[in-house]
Length: 548
Image (cartoon, rainbow, N blue to C red; front, side):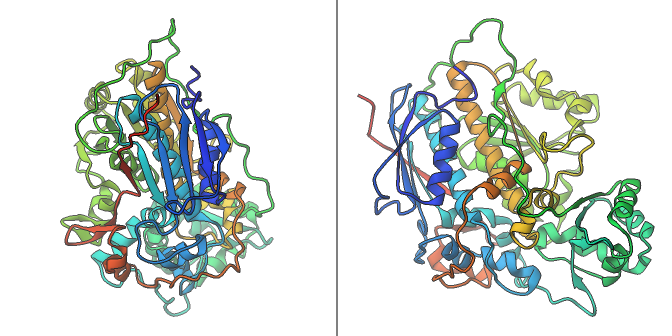
């Protein structure tokens, strides 16, 4: 069987005609499903239903129901309602002072990916003899899951989700504009490189120093107000000079491309699935296993994760919520983000939002001892997930071939930034740069400081890992999956979005902490006593619809 089509031989009936359903059906089709058009969406799945009609492996028939409100006691009937009632407008609008519509159907696209992911995980569970394969999700649950780190911060530090008004003469930037009219984004994680870049453009040291904290924290706060001297300095140079200064400082800059520019071409497999080590002889499929202990379709499976920031940890978190046990590889002393305020139970609330439930092992992967630790963990793992930049896996000697040598049946999942969309040397693969280059920033009149490609990229990475696990189960071969933020941007570009003037009918949330405490949203959030976090965005029930 072709590992790029692990659902080959499966026929799915898609009932309804909504964007979340269309996204999910397209994802399943890319995995090898035959998708049949079904009747209208049923009352228990107003945003659509996916039902397996036929599978090649017998057992229970997977399904996934998609709602708008799902378990939330607030009526919602579309993307704009969900954006309003679940906080998407609140986070997107912080940078400009108040809630506003995000002009892409972000929550619906996330729900479609989550639905396809749940259906594929249910198919894997059915292959292993389980019957808890009837999944349900909703666009509201997808939105809450996308905002989990913002909700955690808002509930750990009351008032942290309020948009801050610019002080003095500060202005809301980036992007910046050069003297020849090029709108551009800047990225660096290094304060010294930030200093070198702006000094080369003639900005004053005080403005450079004062601008670094809000620039560095914009991923977490969804706001960024900077001293006007920075924008003034950028505007005194043409873009070529800006780019030269960035190259000299080791800073990434990219122009904001128009939304009319075609999206990057899609790869043959949306998850770049391929056999990890082509076997000399056709492998035997892994035999069905007895239902393992634990809950969720991935119960009994083990994930080793070496990731940071949002995209990678969110992917690992999704796999954990599907039932897998997740072990993080962290540097000596632990991930530095553990100590970033506000704190929740002795750990960063934002870090806990993306990593709770995971165990951790510290290892310096630049050393032989650290590499040995990684290999030892991988030798008993089902998935190895990393989001290292290009070249780092080879420097660590922990690329797919290295790990396949100790675990031939491993799923090796890489969550990157650009994949092959840009030639080497690539700029930093971060959310705002990807938004700028892909045309998404122009599409949303931004970029939006809500990290939409980070979040959707994390969901796609988890989706790819689940698809690879199913391919492994059906072929016996190890499988490599490669996804990137640019894949998330492409997906946001190619779907048809609701009109921007489609006003929400649901109430607009302006306080994430109040939303998380509202009994109407109790099914979306859980609290550890110090902060609130999104619950799993799906549920899985048992079904008796067995294949004759």
